[in-house]
Image (cartoon, rainbow, N blue to C red; front, side, top):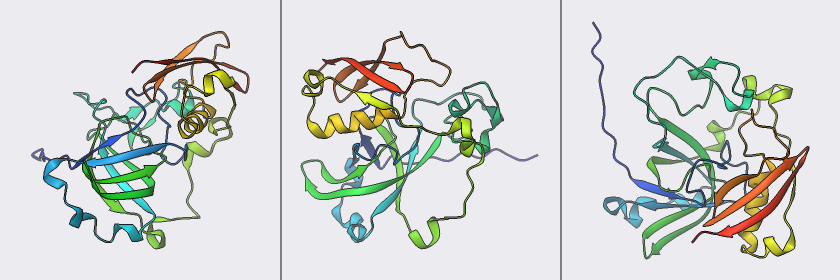
Length: 234
């Protein structure tokens, strides 16, 4: 009989982003490059020496915990949102958060490294796909000579009906002015990839997405995303 082993991992940092909830988060890292995230280390790991040499790398691998997706029982198949939620695939063939160990892996570009901020060393990254406060278990430098595979295939994600076709985003000027320019640019990118669940396709429904301490309300008509309100929620 094989005895099940368990391990304990330390949370070394937290990711801070514009997303207080899961709705609207890009489905993969690096899709919305205008987005910014901040890796803030937990007190025991706030040591600038631990980042020595990182400035010479352009990208990171971030290993993190699906903290909002812990379930008591795992299943061998899942329903990927990219396939509309109506086809099952093996869990190992997906990046679903519902797995025996709720561990995520994201590749992100380093935007800046702040060694002596009031919060200690902080890594600012581009294109995060994590919710605000997500626990980070480890970071590792991305190595282009071994981590890049130009001849790789993408399985079901390369099927024509599962491709991402960016939508046109319309934000009235009076609403766009409610956000700083860089955050408005990031919002446009996020909305262009259609944050709705794939099984929802109502042109009259108004969706609400928390973003950057605002509530963004929008609807989608054909290939257009129309923002109808941006409300400050503090």
